Picture 1: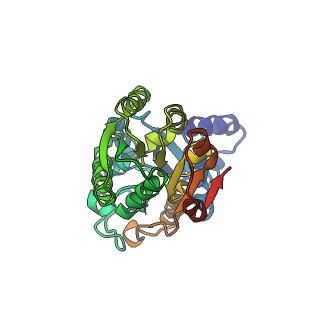
Picture 2 (picture 1 turned 135 degrees about the vertical axis):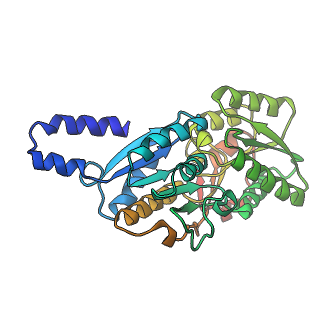
Picture 3 (picture 1 turned 180 degrees about the vertical axis):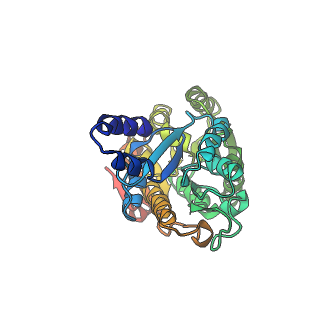
Length: 324
């Protein structure tokens, strides 16, 4: 863990440091960083955002990393510990952590990343003037879900039923996804079948259900847990030959067929930027919620060929990247 590595590094050097240097180290601001699991690439993006404001872990700021191993119910316990310590900023990389943080404190600044509507969630009062102690980055968009489903339909024009895979432990995001996809599906003449998965085993069961019920395609909801299990998801989709659409391009890198959405790395970097600006004295209430302006369509042509799917020229031309 980041915290363990950092403490080990300090422990080896402390004996050689003068008392004044140790006191200065102890006075460094502490950032509480929450994610479902350790994701080195995601954390690196956060560090880049901090560096943009002159903050470097171990030099002038301490990072306390916390994960819940996929158990969202642990967030309140983890947060209460850090609130008691009066950390300088809380950075959350998923919606349940952001909601738990907002419940835990009204004074410590919170910077969130969410794929849901932060106003609807009650995280902020307004996107432009958040108010309170919370701001962050949101790549929520009902239109985004509709566009992703439309791309999937273009790949599988004969489909009549589409599975929607959601994580029930993040009920708010699951409900939002189902609502948005259902609305888009009606416009496209599709019926949706909702599948729940919150563990590795339940993902396996979901694909067995898709195959058994002959559901022609799958829409995977944006969710940190699914991001972490992306190799499993892409592998199962290939094994069962189910055309599948995902929210972030990292899925395409491991064999996912189609992705459409904003860059997670850019979004997390912005969380780091806002964290740094708050450490410099700016208030969350004055920092508008960031919304991405660029969305990328990535198609894995190798995967399409492997499952016997022909990608229409229209989609190939529209794609920002085609993985051959």
